Each structure stands twice: as structure tokens, then as C-alpha cells.
Length: 392
Image 1 (cartoon, rainbow, N blue to C red):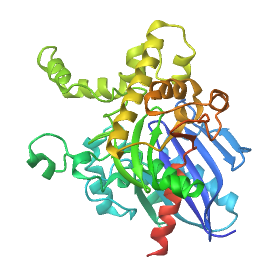
Image 2 (image 1 turned 60 degrees about the vertical axis):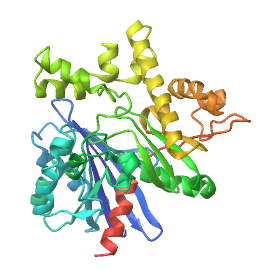
Image 3 (image 1 turned 60 degrees about the horizontal axis):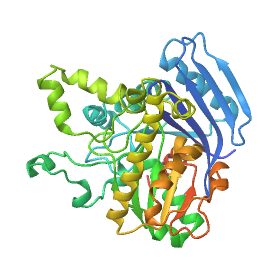
Image 4 (image 1 turned 30 degrees about the vertical axis):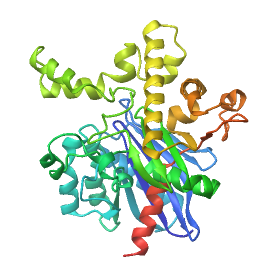
């Protein structure tokens, strides 16, 4: 076997990972896994590229993350059957102003990334958490940080600037955008499918528990819905999306809510969960007859359609709409609702193709191409890691 790279994508209570063979024609997925820490006994599940289960076992003897990461590395060593693992890549949520390309992680880099935690309080520390244990477990292995904000780094002033005094922009208070690793993958895949379409005006809808849009042309981000933090823009599973800032001032001044209480409400108690009072899971809400669940779904769809139309303004028109991520790839109901509201732009949905989650879901006569493209942040990270290692 040739050299391999392990890619880690740490979430709030899970670690997704992919093991990639660094082939000459690009990284090839060997297997992917999920370390789920929701339960008292974490569960490690690993599947090959075709979805066949290679390993599935609870890890009852592991109470610390270092031990759980060691279990992953031990399994990888046995799978590769030799010392072929050459690096570990990480998805890091926020790169701030300074980190705009993949970077080798050392003590100074780690310290700088930890300092960005206030910009992504729920995500940044968690995405950094595996790094220190891995430095102890495998000090000889390079670790590489790849950033969710990097794809949007070159946004023009009209897209990135907030309408507040300029001195704050100079302090780095600007729109950064997120889900960049996903958008980078979609841009690459779209260019493979249709170079002409990739050169045109495309809105990519990354719809999942975290949701955002990206307006891109020629594989470049022109505009996006998330801002300084991952709170802005679309309604999400537990995050509110765009909100009148006066609401927050009112809650502070009249109801005495502290900054930490507001943070908890905005990140963890809002969105689909807050409106429905039932669940943050779109699958649960889409199948529910509860009035508040129906309202939550309708609000999610309405907000998404409005923001897609706004992205079309940023692009000066729209040639293609791409759906991706968990909801975008797997929820015909949500795609149907969004496209119905965009009929005035010339969007026509093929109902049968949409219900089948087909790759091309535009009906004949649609002025806008409609596609479902599964995303893979791990593949993007693997490509970026290979590029960095090749240039060392």
C-alpha cells in the first residue's frame, strides 16, 4: 500500500474520519469512520468506501479522548499493515484573518487558533481538541489544519463588510463565512461535471444541522450567508440565523439576560428546535403533524428561498442551484418547498427526480439547472494536505 493520510472532523460529540490513499491521481478514500461519544460507552464504527462495515464496537474501557483516538490509530495501523500513515489532517472551523491556507500545526499555530474561540464558541475548541492528544500519541506525524473560512477569504468589500464604523473592520470584525471545505469540494466536483456550468453563476445550498449558502462563479466565493460567526444567515437546527440585533439588546436590557445566556439561546435553543419545541432534526419535523413543527419547517424553507434569491442578486443572475449536505441531499420535501418559492426566477423542479434524490432534478424548460451533489469535506482536506506535503 502507498502512503495514507488520516482526516479528522471533530463535532460536538462525534469525530468523523476518513483514511485516504495518496494516489498519484488524487486522494482515494479507503475507509471512513465515526466515533460517537453520545452514550456512556462510545461507539467506533468504520466502513469501507462501498459502505460495508469493517469494524463496529462499543469502547467501554475508554473514558478519555486520548484513549479513543489511540483506538482509531491502532485500527488504522492494523488496516494499513505497515507504517504508511504520513500525516493527520484536521477540519478547523475558524481561521480568522491570518489562516487562509492549510498549515502545519505547531505550538504557536495551536495557540493562535485557540485565541479565535470567541468567534466560534461551540465549534473551535472542539475542532482543536484532538490535536494535543495526537501530539503525544504520534509526535512524529505531521498534523495539518485546514480551515472552513479559507474559501471565503477573498470576498470583496461589499460582501464582507458590516455597516458599522470602519475601525471595527480594521479589527477583523467582518464576514468570514463557513462551510468552506464543503463549498471547495462542490466547486471542484461541479468543474468535473460541467466546466461551462462551473464558470457560470451558481448558488450552493449547504443544508444540514448547520446551514448556509454560497454564491460562486468560476469556483470562487462571491458571497455567503454566514458572517463573523456561524450564527448568521439561514435558520438552522439549533441556531437562529439572521436576527434583528435589537432583539438581543432588548433581551439584555429588559429581561436581564447575560451574554452567556444569550449565547446559549442563540446557539443551542433556537432554530428548528426553538420554533418547533420538538426537535432540531428535520426528519422528525417533516414527518410531524404538530402545528409548531409545520411552522418550523415552513420558516426554514421560506428563509432559505429568500436568501437564495439574495445570492442571485450578488451574482447578477442565476444559472445553477446545487443542494448538498444532510438536508440538501436527502430531503425532497425541503427542496420542493424551496424551488416552489423560486418559480419567479424560472426554477422548475422535476417531481419524480426530486423524490428519487437524483443528481439532476430540473424539469424540462427550467431556466435554472438544479443539482444534488453529495459533499465530502474530508476529501477536500485530504487534497489540501497532499498539496501542502508536496510543497514542503
